Image (cartoon, rainbow, N blue to C red; front, side, top):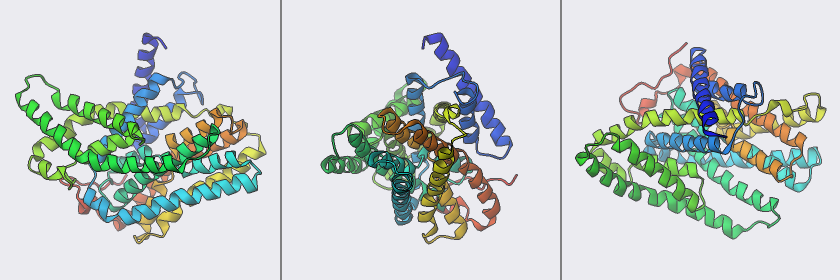
Length: 418
């Protein structure tokens, strides 16, 4: 793509995302729905004006990294620790059940071979942490009990999904599975999160000192974006997903992080608040690109809607995709409204599911019909849960404790009734 075309496409993406996000908000729906629909409208599914290319994918990747940075900034780690056991239950069951049930349907129900069946089950394990946390943030419930549980479970789901994706990739290229390499990836992820806090503390001290003597505006957002991008690169270098680098950077800089950087920021809350405020415009510029790209990646015209296989296959997988994620949430010790909301929040597959499905397609492991069935399930599980979450919050609003009870300071997080 030449420069003028790229500039035009970027303009169309930003404006369409903003307009449809405003429309969605007016219709009492999360703004992320409008941004996803902008991609569907602009992409091959409808108008066909835009197609994903490497430059747009890179901007979308920056968007999801910055979004996870913002999530990390607002995360109450003490609250996350309190819900850690429940997040673990939700994540593990939401990972294992869809994997086994999806594999069973593909292998025994439809007679697919071992490797395609593994890809089908692997695709259903995904949870789109970007879409999930954005919906919760749009509903202003990120500081609530269910918000903390979902965030913890989605992060764990993402780590497990990356490991599984690595294993399936080794299968696809015929190199076999190396448990040693899998163990190394897990170890690197753990070490990364342990070392992120002291590293961010040291860098932030340098940033604050330069900020006091600098006469050039924009030092804080420039250096903070650089820090986030460095953490994303470092995460990839040690075998973890780049987006977890953004989350770790935000977490380490959070005013509610208690080891070891929190003490320093509590001594200077003005600087911590300034970081949050000056980063918001940058985050809100890049994140819509990511959600538009999810919509652009869905080509609904490629699906043979008259095929009986498509309806049977996608219907069975959709049932597994929903029930597999709900199961873990329904057995934890929380009020029933909270359980239903948590389970629903774990359903979106989004870009993570598309990565699994695309790897299977590009490796010639999944045929056109199987890939199309997976795309249908990914599309439905991406577009519908935000509406269901909105309805659940509206119905159970009076039964849910306010997020301020979980450490969100200075503002009401209750979503206003329509």
